[in-house]
Length: 155
Image (cartoon, one colour):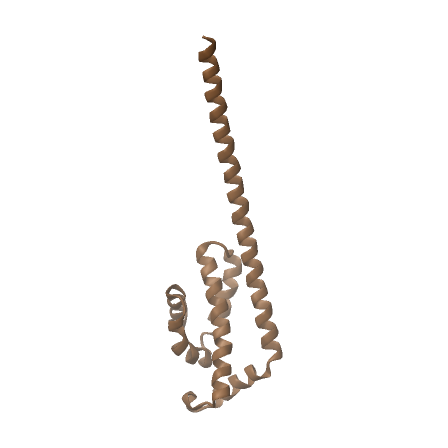
């Protein structure tokens, strides 16, 4: 009878050890997921800070958009204006694509992603953005292409 009771106590201790381990692993996964979300938000914010510094300090970006607006045929823009427009919009497209990816993966909160959407929707009528998207859009992730094409088609 003593060995049966000892065996039951050993089994109970084993079960408690397994349950305790599972709880510990669950807590570690939750902490890891939260750390990933926090790091993602910080990376996105850092990216926007860098873009805003660039937009605020690079007069060629503004000038290229003005030249584009006045051009009768954008395909005849000089190389510098064309490359500046492409680089500027590609920078924004990349940042938007990164945000879209993280939002779809659940690592970017919806309230932060909604800021991206408001910005993109506000720019969808911009002809220079549409011009660059026509050639550059296919270079981006298919899910992001579908998202952008949906917004651009909403006009």
